[in-house]
Image 1: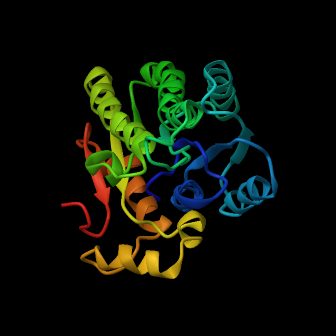
Image 2: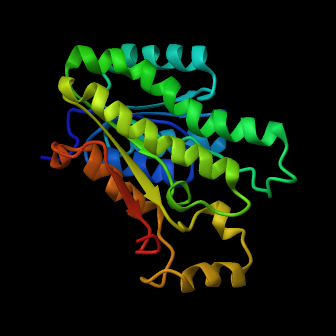
Length: 248
């Protein structure tokens, strides 16, 4: 039996990058997958096709995860379309880097809203469905930056640190209903975004990592699979770093 067979997963920000890798990993393990992204562009449509190729039900929803009313309506639509929601992965996120002295209020608010408020929105939305089922797994995407901080990323670090506090609180609130909540803290992951960095910058990062390589989206997806599946049935309120021992 596949690890997620019979389960329905909702993943935000999954038309590309880490979110897409998670969606593909879940579909390969038999999950029906609902995913969101801000717009139904070519990446969005291609992701939907790729997921369906695994023989599972898959549907994309163009939705702004930082908008509360829109998120609640989208979650209810997913529950209606798929019949249930067993797994939520709060993956939607952006960066707007800069030193605090130059950071604008707009840059701060945008990152906090998309990275952190979105987790509140989606978790509120799925909570009622998981409570009825008396089961569920919520996986929040944090970052090693949320644990250790990083100069020039105060907004991003604050959003990801907030995700950790949110995760631990939700785990305590919903544990009695057999709903688990955990966070993943990726380190330097090779994606389209990091791929645009100069080679010397990438090498500098890799030299700081004991495993001497950047991680892949699949490395993160494998950890998400563990947290989403029954293999982690007694794991809740935890933060798992996927960073090659960069943050120990």
